[in-house]
Amino acid sequence: MIRPSRRSFLLGSLSGAAGLALSARSYARVRGSNEDLRVGFVGLRSRGAQLLAEFRKLAGVRVVGFCDVDAKVRAQRVAEAEQRNEKVFACADARELFAREDVDAVVIATPNHTHALLAIWALQAGKHVYVEKPVSHNVWEGRQLVGWAQKTGRLCEAGTQSRSSAGLQEAAAYLRSGALGKPLAAHGLCYKPRRSIGKVEGEVALGAEIDYDLWCGPAPKVPLRRKNLHYDWHWVFATGNGDLGNQGIHQMDIARWMLGYDALPPRVLSIGGRVGYADDGDTPNTQLVLLDYAPAPIVFEVRGLPESKELQDERWEKSMPSWRGARVGVVVLCEGGSLVIPNYTSARALDREGKELAKFHGADALPANFVAAVQANDARRLAAPVLEGHLSSALCHLGNISYQLGRAAAPEALRERVRSSAPLEDAYSRMEEHLAKNASDLRALKLGAALEVDAPAERFRGAPEADALLTRAYRSPYVVPTASS
Image (cartoon, rainbow, N blue to C red; front, side, top):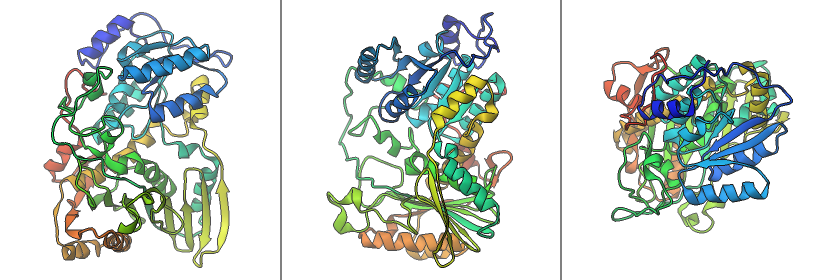
């Protein structure tokens, strides 16, 4: 692939054109093992800061660039770099970073709604890409990202780090060996404390340090109507995907990996609501999703409320419920027992009576895996290639689409609907009990649309209103380019 000049790249991406004007400089050479990999970082708060620290620990990595739309955060990271004697370029617009010839790879840790677009722009500019989960904000743009990685030949890794854990790799092999018998179902759990984000009466003013146009990117540029710009974007569908796509994408990926599914499910159904408080969020804090794979379905559970209403105080964060020894994890139920995965790196195999049969543990090392794969110029070495990230992200999006098309339903109607799936009925019964302990009205729950999925086409069958939610209306010039163009 030939690489665009800085000016032609900026002009091409600003126009929204999928095909960039390219210079004659070749980017085909492979960096030698004795050369530093020059890495730029886009998104420098929270997860971005964590990844920056992890990459800095790796031999052969040189931090060369920073990008963040928040000038205060950007200045803080630059000051820290200067103390480390790192010479870094800094900017608010990621296209300036991507256009630089002294950047080989980029790490993207921005809000969800910009992941796919920024990753595609970076690939078009000849960069290798590490993009945080979920790799997309909707199904369509995730598939375009996969297409651009294939089209450009650059390496693209998804930030679902569990796939780099030797412990979970061993657990997956153990499960597939048949030691626990046939899998019956996988339950993904996201029991994570989520308090109200508050409710405002009107527009919230932003500080001059924020480039709000760049922050909004592909999303509608509308006045901010919540207390916090940062992080709480997770709980608004225009920019986030709720906890299903925030934390849950990790467990969704593990569940799909353990069961060996490499396509979307034939059917999806979601039940949920934003219960326990009224605030400026619109994503569910309580949710069930049935991904009706055969022979073993995946059932995903999101709970943001504590064990009971009495604990909705300073004890909230330390009083979340658990199931079979996991709170934020995966439980694979099998004919001969279960595999319990309570975190990103370890697992326990249990027989039907709960006796431990085997234990697995091994730290994850995804940044190191990415660097090694880039140095070798070998996509086969990626532990979490972008295709896997796309499929697991898409499962979250399908669940949210069902939810968004849902309608209020009486508790009796919900109970009747879940009887078609034993794993779903069990999860619903536990959710019903949990909400009762929190004095939450079950009538606040929505019964999502039961949707048939054309898995090869990554579309729905006979549901145009659902198909419309597979993508979004993109705001110019922040338009995700089609990979086939």
